[in-house]
Image (cartoon, rainbow, N blue to C red; front, side, top):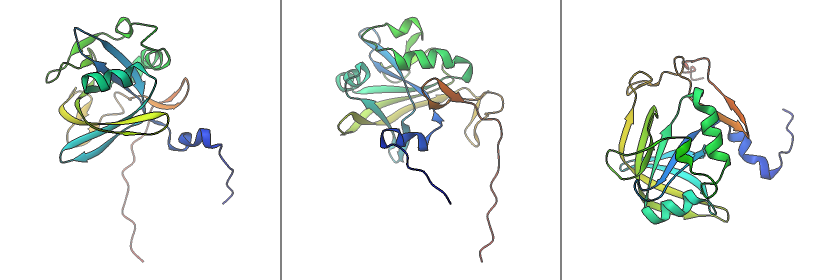
Length: 187
């Protein structure tokens, strides 16, 4: 198989497209910020943990450190313009609650997106530092999803509500087909 070298500053594109989320940080009534992130992943079930990689110079990084909480919000694909905007403008330059309305979480004072179709509320559990990002590990204390789009047995109903998958920059994909894998025979 022929392979071509990929510039190391673009290595992450090999791992894309990835679901794109909105990270809420701060505290309702004090400071609030939203930012887009696709570098988000589950880490464990006992306790329930999720990780998010956040740039060190960002307002979101500062607010997660200060308030020790964050939310992971899922928006539908038809909100991709808002998602992209909150991911490209600093919260130091723009009040992002003018783009996405913030409400308080059910368990924490963390901001969540009012009309998100799913939300994780997380307390800061730990963090890992690299040169340019902090990997924040949050313990999920509340998880909610709209049953029209999400089923606890089968997950997302992508056909009726595709969630945005970030490819690069302004580029997003939406999923169009579900395939059930078969187990191959052992030889």
